Amino acid sequence: MLLIVGLGNPGEEYAGTRHNIGRETVGALKKAQGLRDFRLEKKWRAWLSEKKIEKEKVVLLLPDTFVNKSGAAVAPVARFFKIKPKDIILVHDDADLPLGRAKLSFGKHSAGHKGVESVMRALKTIEFWRFRLGIAGRRDIPAEKIVLRKFSPEETRLAKKIIKKTVEAVELAVKEGPERAMNQYNSQ
Image 1 (cartoon, rainbow, N blue to C red):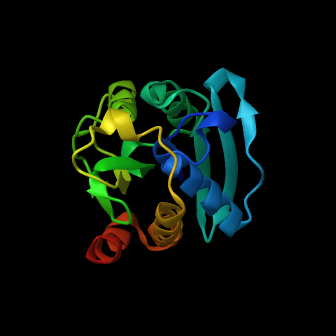
Image 2: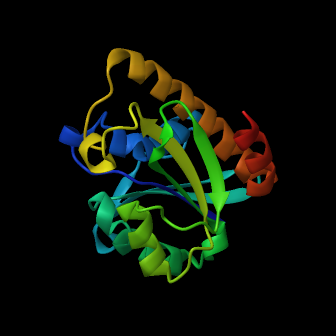
Image 3: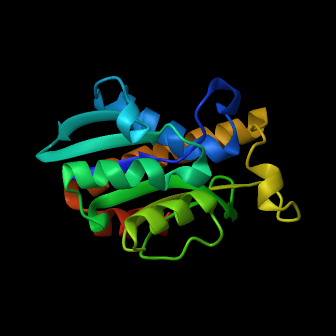
């Protein structure tokens, strides 16, 4: 069983912001795979959708918390479904990568991403997978000043391309394993 988490802020006012690219990618995965609509689980402060993809049961999770409190949703869901950290995939924004670029990594430190830090604290480990989607347009702007900005029309085109590529890579990770997905995803 895999737990796939889309980090982002809940609420319409945050839709289309750079910080929500992970949340939007997991929403696109749900749509591409024909999974059930997300349902709110108040006890876990999360939106969930579940289904088998190929032979693998998959739980999609959108925390109903702000990004920096994501661990409060991820850890209880992982415990309930008895999902080990190595079977958790976070999908999130990364201000250290240029827009349109992405990386899949395992067991790496947060590089200052508050949502990732929250999940690490809650799980008490760094041993999980992360799809890191680049959101930086310009390197001279601090991350905290760009994460809540919306994408321009040209940036939206790049964001949609990387979301599509990431959905395909997550599907590959589910079907053939994250290691296989990492080799293909990181080489593009």
